[in-house]
Image 1 (cartoon, rainbow over the protein chains, first blue to last red):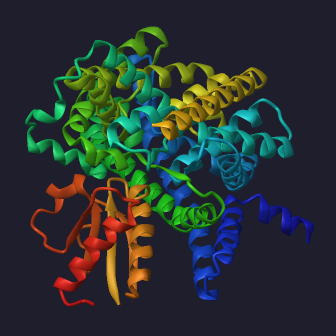
Image 2: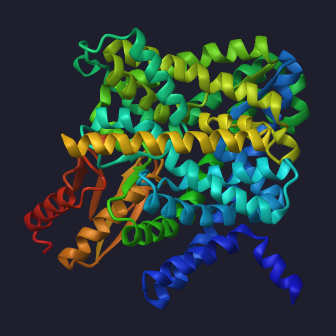
Length: 446
Length: 93
């Protein structure tokens, strides 16, 4: 019996299913809605880990061939893939992260209720990445399971209000009001880049006045843009390696065809992973929102980055293009400095490079958007390459993949020494509370 | 029952928020519907009566007239005005 219960709570699919069950019951849904919502959440976690399994197995030949040919370690950059793989491989990380996700949300509500930081973080896949990241860093620092959950949930709740607060001054500039915030794990990168863009930019020349080619719209389609980028990298590697070396992996398939098939397999894995994420968040996020609506009056929803896209579509495209350029520069710099090569993160470039562009335009116009995108892309790859030298993700199941969320890189680096990291995060939290209270006072006087 | 799909780039973030907004509005109007959130890349071939997305995706659905574009995905007033208008025009309420 005890064994049965322990096995149950060690499975993130079941813990998150239970969280959804509680959330749905609190919202007084019907029995059939509660049942299907609970099951879909659990199924989503299963689909998600299948997707991350495919991603890792499809990237493995690339990593081996890349090392053989270039004598550097190459890896794909996707935080979703890293945390998905860790969750499937390390039971402690899996179970503690699921609890951190749920309890961290309660912390978010308590903080939003009691402090001036009124942000409710609603970007589910980012909450998930953050929860696994925190479980991982506390786990490798040797904390007990209970402490991982307690410290992890506290940090999760604090970070979910701190990050939107850091971005909010620029978000207000973009949206023209204070009704929505940005809830994403790329906040530190985009805000830093936009600040640098603002230093060199000229606000009077708005990027929205330029005309851009429509063909760029194509990259909004995630499946296509991931496939193209992975196909390019895979083809470079199989052609550089030649048929003999590839034969060790390809089981008789022609080496060029093998490269294309693996790129397609990787993309398929990303699509499956996203389907899993969609299923497991579909019930959790609305449940969270339902609870926070009741408990936190005047809450500001912190949303995924596309909430800002409509405000500056041109800057989005400029940010995307220059983020890719910055990433390619970053790849060369990483190979020279760290001896590893994080591949361009095309999803990162489009979504968050785009936001860097939008923020850059708000702080420094056309030139600001260009510089912001460029700096952001470079920071993302450079940070990912740096992180790869600090941690051995492969040891925890995430082989051949690295992070592409800058906040995750910063949080992991800070928490490498947990006491210093926690002290810094707490200090930032207090500072932001003070700043936000000051802003509110000036608003109410105006 | 009315079949609605909300769409964003990855199909996990903004589309889910839009799903909640639309659900909320439809409940207010008393219209029964089934809403799913999806990504722009693989939405082709899915059957639906109406699609709701952000104004950033206007070019992706330029050839369709059953698409509603939202500027602010959490603004129920905007969503209500646009949805009500569409449903009335097409005799769905």
